[in-house]
Image (cartoon, rainbow, N blue to C red; front, side, top):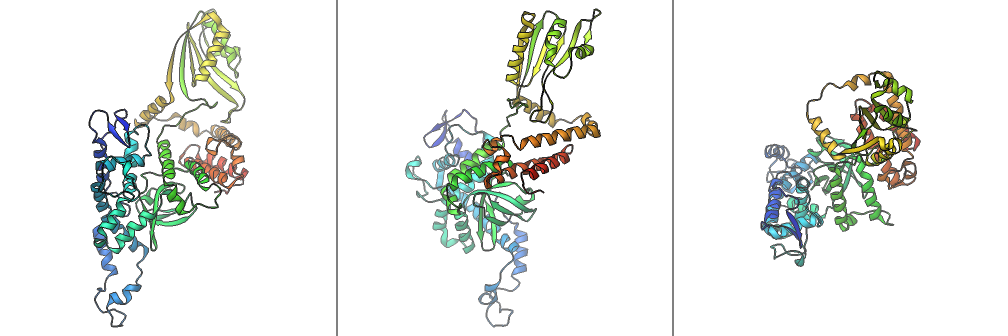
Length: 538
């Protein structure tokens, strides 16, 4: 995939062009996307297995006498009533789509040309104000290829220069019209079925790895049994897939599916889209999905950006996590200790002094003072640690995890020590840098974990379980952004809110099952939330 460097591309008219004359870069990129994804079709079968299967079904030749003894040819008699099983039909449709897919992509390349590719990609991304990052574009490649072939229509004024593709017609429709005489009935039916299948969000209700899954359209509520051998190997119940489901006869298959699944916590956003689309209607129909295709695609692109965006890390007060280390010079370490010891709400000055290093006269020379606050917070702790103050000689070092706390502690030091402390420097580390360092550490061999031994202590586990239960007990009445600022207790009063709360709890249970240390305690706490909100238990 060629690299699309942010800042090199600029918005011009209906397409993206480079500032320095290489205006064919986007066209080359899109052509590469097409070629790289030709062999990624859903349901493509291996020729050898297909030939073996055909031999099993067609033991009697089409023109041979029918085995029923009617005297007619097999094709004029029992062949007409033969209904192949779903797996055989899936194999046949997969082969047909595999053949069609490559031909359709080549046809779209020829008929769209560079101008058409630029215009279609620009419209697929909904004309972004800034060039998306390279990784985002690479992830959208397979879906764009399907959308541009089966969905993209244009008007003459939307494209710079004439195209071989007539206005108002998709490449797939134009191909069907031009090649109708050369296509089998199955290939014609496939093009028609895929063209009429709208994109939507599908929740995995039940999964049979290697065979398929039962999907529920989150927008329409329709359930459909889909045969899909490849994607079903990695899918899990609760995953949300974006794509279209086309049905031919007894077989439903995924075509043009996104390259990744959304976890359950993204469902409330899709439910918000559903509420907007419904707007007083009793239900959403497949026709409405087609009418709102651009809105549904926008929701998908926004969720895709969010899925791979670094999370906003916050402390227990909900403040953005920004580690700050403040450096001061103090006149006297002992006087600084006496002035600042009151910031610790859990230990007295005498207790802290007993732990400090002192000189021969008993004056403090080195000590750590925890900056603490009493009172239960959202995490269920009775005491919140706001930061640490370290005095070493005439140096005072203060560590906090937010800009707001840094501002508060500076006022406290100024008030308590006055001219006896002089601010020198502040070292700031953002949450993004912390996440990057955490990923770098995770990529290196992990040293033996001391906390694993600690977790075997029954008293420690009991205390952590108590904290976990307190957190989830408070969560019921906490305002949740994903619920539109409502508390879970308020949200479950409506059907949509109830479904959103269930999705959030399902996501928490999924994470808990992967947690070897506190997973069982978390599952028990979430189960308690379900009972309190009268939700089905699992």
